Length: 72
Image 1: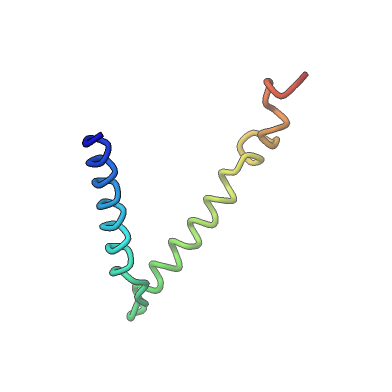
Image 2: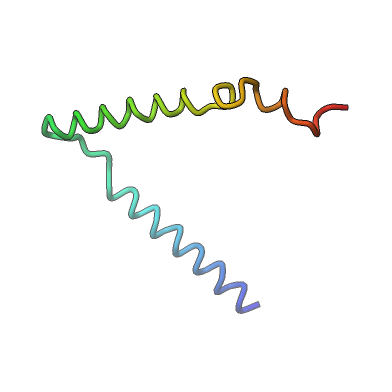
């Protein structure tokens, strides 16, 4: 029973630490043009990757249409 309390205590402490860490980071704005250009390039690259590597573009079909275990 003590081990279970220690486990939950460590998990709660880790969760609190991560919440505090993420809240302290904040979402500060970029102040220079170089940073804005880097952020814009990464956002556009992420959008392009999401469009390029989805199920339809990889297989030509949606995942539920081609799964063999779904056929009866």
